[in-house]
Length: 211
Image (tube, rainbow, N blue to C red; front, side, top):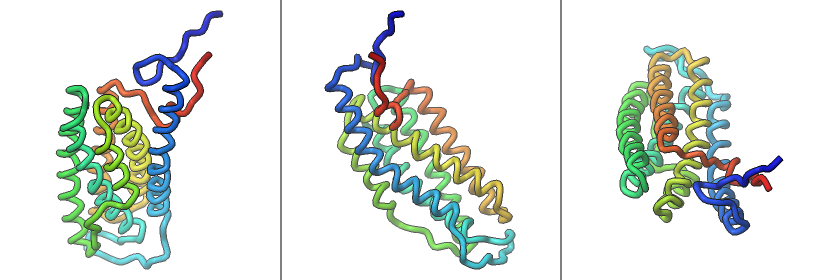
């Protein structure tokens, strides 16, 4: 039975393309996986006392989640700006604009929630997230599209898992409201990414092609 070669990122597989895709995936993975661990740590953190508020009890996990939403916006909004400016297709540029709009609104709610709950928010993105922006800033054309797709699929997928955990456990109405809006923003981004036709992910970029 004849098997066809698998195409990578819109072109034919060649050893050179395999090496390039693998190197790109490893570079992005070295940034994504520490950030993913950070999200998982925040979602599982504990030890600090639960505080009574006018909006319900606030746990350490609630505090961590509000901070993580802020940290996500600090790199995803600039990533949206880059997509709007550098995306190689209308679909990618449209996604960039929607990312900016979504995270601007989410960040505004995050600041409101933090102020009402007495949570101090970071002003700078995490180092790994700065790495995402640096990778995207250095890319252009279809290379930019591929890297943006790989990063967003990994990070938004993990963010949605954190959101689900918070929505299932929090007893704080403000945190629940923030989680609901964050869920909508991350899901919308993945839907928009699907509309671009992007198929690349960290796992697929390093998988072996059919002979």
